[in-house]
Length: 359
Image 1: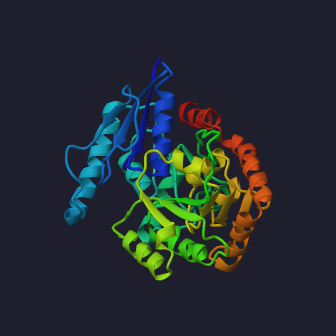
Image 2: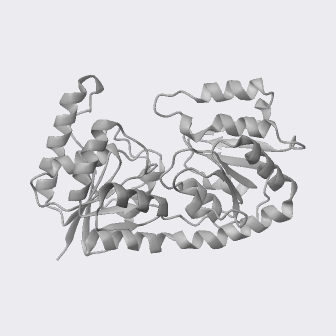
Image 3: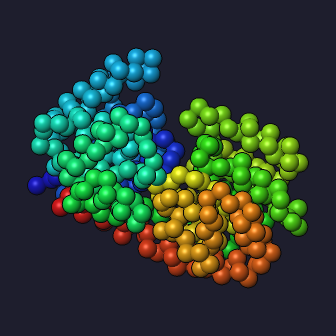
């Protein structure tokens, strides 16, 4: 008998959470034992990633109107409840933080089994009301997915749930090729405040003997923060604008990984940083802030990269300078990245998702 699996997510824009949900959908639909429906119900319903055409996509027929937020919220809850009841799924997988509360509220009083996965910093406060909801709704879920060891401990303490499992993200293979690496320090991430691109630009400006190096930032303005203009101004003020490139949103991020020599990450808030894993898969040494969750599951300090205490720009500069100056060290870290990332091979990770969804 075919099992109906429903995947619920607010959007499929360009982002780590969205990419992973797309991979899960495309993986499950290849199995004739499943039918897969993706319910796309958030404010922006753009589909950036390529879904297998066999995956059914359902969206609300109304727009989420922020000017009438309360009405839109209740309409969305009603839409989700009606859709889930009509589909009568074997199990629902929900990705999000605030949005997971939407899904759990929509199934109250039903027998629908929901697996929840938070995709951001696990100890981040979402505000009193949302935290109050989570503490009451999450224990009713069929299961909870933690992305990292730190997430697991935090979720156990917060929700006291018996079915919490660690599943990292599937990291696609980006096999290093024979093309020549350039003197590029690469960073990938949306241009939002928590990514701390301003810190990275300041650090880059203070490197010594790095006139032939370039900093490329792949990412786009998000959350109405309009940070690109501010970052461009900062680069001009530091007189390095000709060596800092803002590449914007890119579908072909792979080519940037393969051209670069070092991957630098300065985020202060993560669930599981896909871009760090992708950089490792492309054979890059990594330097990253050791934010609450994510980097420490991927990076072994001194083995395949450096973990820097959050906001310590002095140590970050010192370690980045070392990677630039010591080519042998950098190449050793790069080789070790290829070994470490095997733990997150896509089929291995996607099978874990399948087990908690279908068992």
